[in-house]
Length: 252
Image 1 (tube, rainbow, N blue to C red):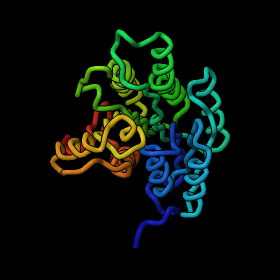
Image 2: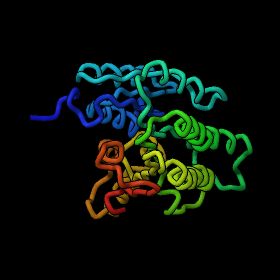
Image 3: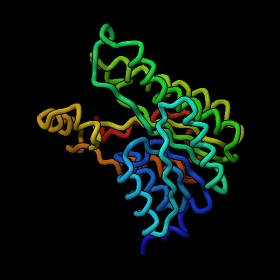
Image 4: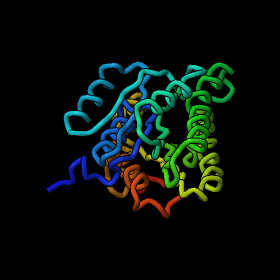
């Protein structure tokens, strides 16, 4: 018999997930709620998808609350965390998953406006949610940031995206040192090629098949593969992992 939501390892915990309506974020919200956490997540435009996630979690006996907030807005993080403060009994888990990624372009062709937009969502949002967590998260909490293999598998035209994610990895390392005394762990997950709308938007079917062949496990990742790693890091079993960059790639 499976573990019920009420008896889950995260029962009584409160979680905030950025970008939780689709893809990896959706799977993370569903998994944390299935493990017993109460989850607040934001979405920017995917109203129907967010409602499906919220209702699906409730139908399974869990608790999730969707908030429509575009993280590109200057006050977005304050609004999200205010909603979390109102809805959650405690703040124990933060997952920074939201991402903005322009079409790949050479550095020479990248505008200041594109730079500001990508950094605002990918890097500044992560910094600000982590800062809020550093001030208000309960002891023994968990901060998990989603990065990208673009920081290690460098490719032309990926400079802006890779830079935004590389900054997150450095913030994670420092925050792990600063918050360790309170038992708060801070880690990064770098997904490999994972079946999402974003991956399919930027790759042809032939390219996706080639990526699958490059993994020892012979397939693309699924959002649930990443959500399961988040679940491990969020659980008591993740207590001895901090300051780590974890490549959840199927060996890619």
